[in-house]
Amino acid sequence: MTTFPRAAIELPLAAERGGPLPLSEQISAQLRAALADGRLAAGERLPSTRALADVLGVSRTVVTTAYTQLFAEGWLEGRHGSGTYVAPGAPGRPGGAAHRPGLAPGGPGAAAVTIPGRTAVPAGPARVNLRPGIPWVRGIDQATWRRAWRRAAAQPVSSWPDPLGLPGLRDQVAGYLRRGRGLACPAGQVLITRGVAAGLGLIARGLLRPGDRVGVEEPGYQTARSVFAAYGAQLVPCRVDADGLVVDELPTDLRLIYTTPAHQYPLGGRLPVPRRQALAAWARATGALIVEDDYDSEFRYDVGPLPTLFGLDPDVVIYLGTTSKTLTPALGAGWLLARPDLIPVLTSAAADLGVKVPEPVQHAVTELLARGDLDRHVRRMRHEYARRRGAMTTVLGQALGGQPVLAARLTGDTAGMHMVCELPGPVVPELVAAAAAQRVDVASLDRYFTGPPSRHGLVLGYGAADLTAVSRGCRVLTAILAGRAAGRAGLVRC
Image (tube, rainbow, N blue to C red; front, side, top):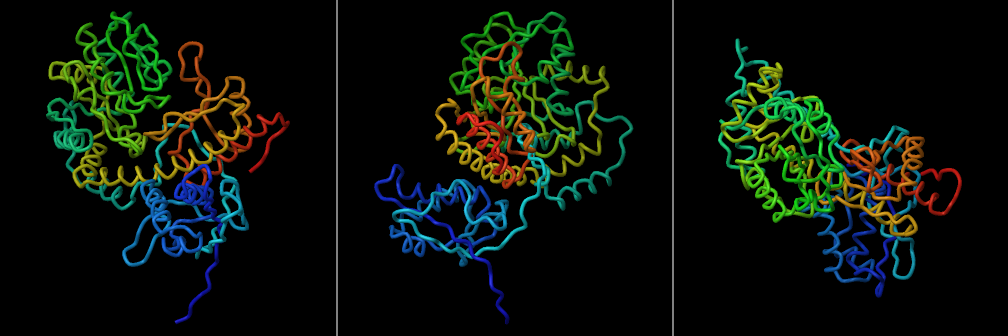
């Protein structure tokens, strides 16, 4: 049997005793940077903990702790009897790049660690989309997707579809929410919709009168504001902070309040349980309804799930969910949960508007839920997004830490598919334009405010770009910021 030679990657890992970080954190940070910027590619094998410990002159426990952290973040995977490998979805190694920013150079205690690898084709000049709210549709398993649509096509055609949605799909949605969100809701309280925006339209049509005061988060989801305004509602901006909606400041004359408590859009706060309880109590005391958009609840990283508002008090909450972020917005399928007396009103609104989810779509989603395919897809994407989130926080965090003059910080990164990079207001328009010129698309925080913005920065999504592109896009941003901080003219290219 012929053995073909393989390319080797030499990484100058340093373990500096007496440094600002513990030894294990030094090693994990350097490996994370190598993973993020493409010097370590998916499928490459890392040295054993014993071998790396011997090379660096540290205890095996130190290396094991570093590897364990990277396992938890989704960068690495173990193969029984074979060793530790870079997990699928990690970037390839750009050809010809011996060293890139992010890994500490050799110094006292540094060692050139040779890792078997493979050489990948350099990334092309494709645009990097770091806008928020866009899922990774290439992560959908094509075999399960095709099977779902084949089963959907084999179903008989209905002469008059159920206005609530297919009974089988409502049963499956109830089970999915029970498994994933701990909701005990009968299928009779589930209404199938075309997504969150469509659900908001049904609520506005069925439950609001022109002039009703509707609370919206400030900053918040622009589409929700547009839908309510289109039905004549008087929008009342309600302040959010790092934890989400500030309940203590809510007025008492609202007809309803729209909120994104799982991962506030766009600031990223997670509404704490005491505030959730206070919000439900406020609704009961004022007679208002809460519209809970369970945005990004499926994707959590360093934190556990929090109870839904609907689960705390289903009498005052209407719950909205969708497949737009877990699968694709092209599917056009979601659900609405409400107390029994509201379901007929909302169903009638759907009939008045002629809003229906095509039955083939409903059959396909039923199949994906019934076979557990959507649950498995969410778990895969949770690991995939965790890697991209890790790359974004590593590249941007290291750069921003070295540029204190910018007064920048990262927030809202514990869940979801986006985070916020807060910056001084004057920097943002220049940064957005400069990034676009280098083929990196980002969103400005200003556009999510109804009135004058009180905070400024970028809303950075990591759902639409792969791990290599996320890293490259962040390096472009940090280079521009570095040039801005240093007062240099022009752009620094990556």
